[in-house]
Image (tube, rainbow, N blue to C red; front, side, top):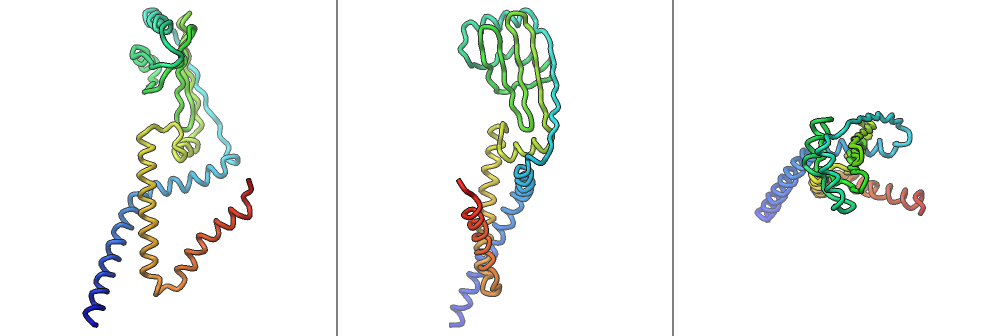
Length: 213
């Protein structure tokens, strides 16, 4: 009987140690991300109360004649939407230090328009094919808007979306291991399950009573 109790105690100690290891590793991975999402959750919830003053930068230039003619020739044979030519990418980078990246252009007979959305702002590039006039406009809405867009994954690219997915898995591991740790300590902590139940009951009641479709 004593040996059986000893084996049970050893198994319990092993699983408790394993759960603690998974719990602290997952918490370390998602700590900064959880802080970011908690803060931006608050700022998003109070977006109407947080004043944003966009800063708009508008630049103009004339593309070289050779580039304009090449773009005009390509526009006549292009569809409504297509890739940005490498020559135009290089010119924009040299002229304004603008990185077009993998954004596509909207082509027409008269102009090329390249939308350049980004977290915390917006931008666009327009090339007139008749006169070669180029316009670039950048709108920046500040750091709060930037962090809010990171929270939503808006215009952040595939790498950031992968980060959000990995963070979600880490948070799930952190929460589930925490739940099992609570279960293993619940016998000596009588308020464990009432507090867990309260954490479930409060948002459920708020949703049922105060959120109406």
